Length: 146
View (cartoon, rainbow, N blue to C red):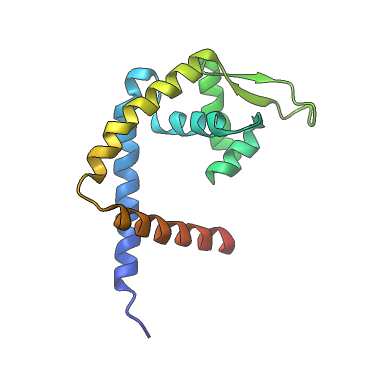
């Protein structure tokens, strides 16, 4: 039987990193009227080739619909997104970016580049690829188990 204590430490480190990333992301995009959560929702919408209802946005993020609905409602109140009729489902409106949302998302992505560069400075491309592969594999296993 292989010792798995390092695996437990990896998971703990991912929890710590997630908390720091969310806090750092909040600081990075706060001047744009965003938070990390809002930024992530805008990212799903901006990166989609078709308009999606909240349930599909939540699924893409691996989150509960209710939490994403709250964020989308806030984004709508602040003018970052709007709703439009869904021809496939009368009650599940589609969420679309407004010009303000597109502008804010683009600005957030410009701010992101130097932030990411600072975090990965000195880490080889190979090490980043390996970390990505390990974390992606772990996430997929959790998805399958759920």
